[in-house]
Amino acid sequence: MPASPLRLGVNVDHVATLRNARGGTMPDPVRAAKVAIAAGADGITAHLREDRRHIRDADVERLMREIDRPLNFEMAATDEMLGIALRLKPHAACLVPEKRQERTTEGGLDIVGGREHLAPVIRQLGEAGIRVSLFVEPEVHVMDAARALGAPVVELHTGTYCEAVIAGDRDRIRIELARLARAAEHGGALGLEIHAGHGLTVESVGPVAALPQVRELNIGHALMAEALFDGLAASIRAMRAAMEAGRPGRAA
Image (cartoon, rainbow, N blue to C red; front, side):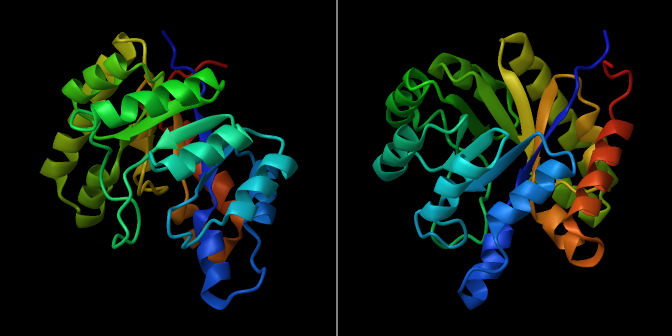
């Protein structure tokens, strides 16, 4: 059976990081989102962190008004963020772990230990018509926990795999790809929609795109880094090409 088409969600957080380094309005993450969509992005991802270090509330509100593709709203499972999501009603909300001291999101959400806290958040988002996803480690038991919580989507954390690619550690690459494959297969068999993301580059995306259960990749930092040299539209087209090359037998 051919693999289903693979969607690309473009994360615009680090356009806002650059803007905030100096203040003012440039570069505009909403403009970046529009460029990304014109270049072939299927959706836009933005993480409104508690400390507002990159994306701001006004950015999310403008994205909701001004883009014509789904918005994936990354958020910590806090009362504040839940209130914002329920007010704005984005297409999707991806629950992620968040620590003030981290540079970016590190590792997946603890959905086993955090079950009691997460369950009512997932329920309220779902009742509001927001597609809920959980950013998690690629482990079989975590897929079981996500299914038990009632979340329809999981996003597999690919950061450890990407670190192995950067290090050129072939054994570790093989181990991490097998881990991703097991989780994707098990989660898909449970009826979960499987997404993946974190640290993916043109060089590392192919084997993840090849996993037939994966329906969407969310990528940001690598695209913005390459955009400094080649332009954002060109970096997105290059990523698209690498994704398609890694997707054998995909559906037309």
